Length: 286
Image (cartoon, rainbow, N blue to C red; front, side, top):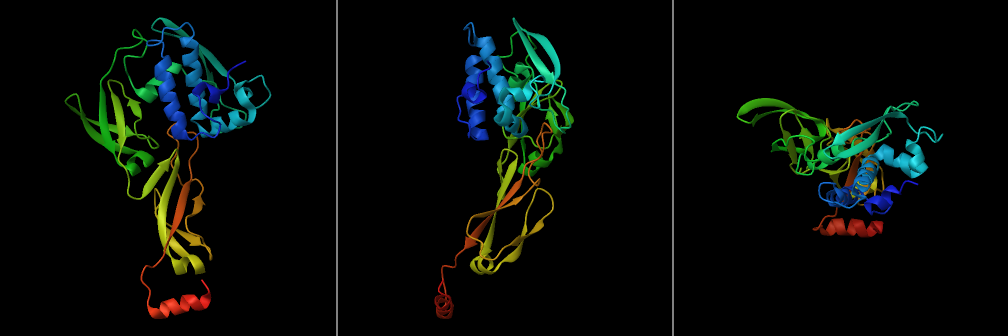
């Protein structure tokens, strides 16, 4: 039987995306066949990459949590998705993997699995751990982009190898991600934003409201990744209430859906009150 993907990465079932990413980083480097010469390193490396490919993707993870490995088995009857089987020589190593055909009414591709070396390079970039003979090492450059450019995508003009080039940053790229171009690799450094915070493909933003607005209700204008929106705050709203805007988050860089935006309402309590204000609050029993 195939091992449990959570056990492969050494994480609990409720692990966050950051915990899954951190676990993959450690396990993949430890078990890369160019570094680990144990007899089972090749198979372990493949399992680690399969586990990360599924658990780092919301739709695949949901399917796996519901059906287990049967979610990716076209013969299981549990919604598995068929595809084609490929074999590739990676230096001295032969790897077989499946490329899913998608289907059965889904608007995304559930599986099978990608070439494990491709997943590794997308995460770490071109390095000395690529099979040695597999491909020549290409130079890696770093580019800083704003939070909104990373979320929405942007076209940038950069100087690479002495030449001015226009490159497209795909929407949904995350901090530390590497993008492979023909002659070079680009390391993405996403600058922190004063308004937005990212968790996977979800976006969080804090909006302040007054004590009276929280008690009586109001309409507030909130920033999004596009135009501002007006959101209704219900009477009696408690501090740190989250309002979910479905589909207003970051579009997955690989095309697997779109995250949500969460508005966290922080209630401002006045620190100085007039005598009359104090009396009014006391009379309300608040």
